[in-house]
Length: 200
Image 1: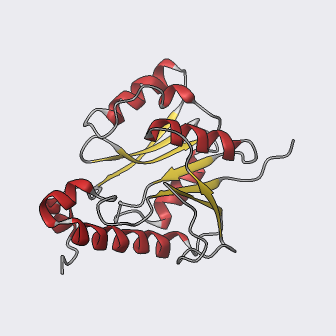
Image 2: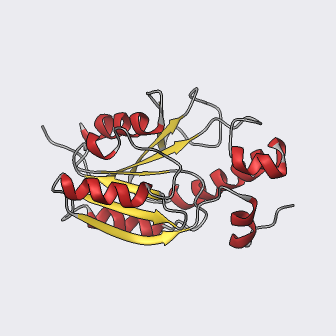
């Protein structure tokens, strides 16, 4: 079967107060956390919309047909699974059935650029895995040429060891990998301030 070129997968949460950025909400309140999340999502939309790549947006709870994401540019799907690892694994399995590679990102990385996404796409031409770490020990991007359930099953998410554990598992699986520049993700108020965006 002929497979299409690299695809981009974006995971987002349906934007409702109390359901996004819980660690931000703990200090700023749910409404401010929601406003920050919506700003981050809009930023990533502006970054990826012009990129000439097949794009999939995976919603956490329900598909929203009338939001800012143009259905002519983004294929809208629903995340499947009880936890983040299962949802990521299932999305890769689904998309890699019809693409030569897939890059998955979240929506809380204001530093992500089209050039980083280009680098990830190029890396997948001669690496099994492309990965970009966050300063808190997680990762903001993961790209694969083939499904690799072992990278996701049983992972303890939202800890400072996720990135290094993923690399360790990649080694055990015999995968080759390419590391992208580290970036800051927005989990806490100080992350938002550090990035220099206005809190108001």
